[in-house]
Image 1 (tube, one colour):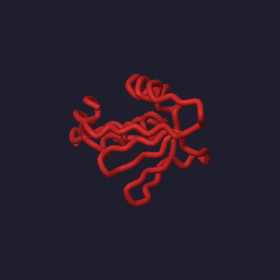
Image 2: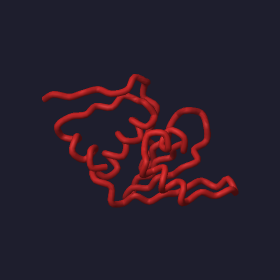
Image 3: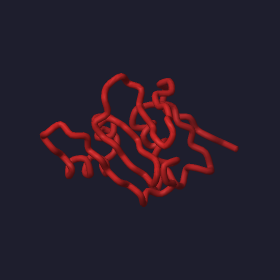
Image 4: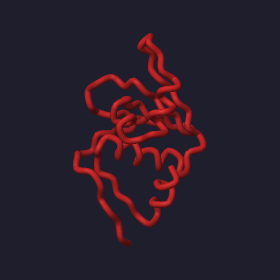
Length: 107
């Protein structure tokens, strides 16, 4: 099966139960919930690569320093597809295959 690798950074995410964390060393300022899975991420990588997330985070904006929590339960491909999207936003390596290309494109 043909696949394409995008990105060049080493693995920047780790999973703890139903939660994904980015291992940059900085505290996360965005939590994205998809079904039972939570992704603790940072605004800048998401805003720079995704117009939809930029819009949603902008609508949530708060000046009190609280963490932005977004619920995206209807995303095509669910948490599995969003994991690849988050990795793409951070510039990490992702593998695009015939099995995931449609859900990634729709998401």
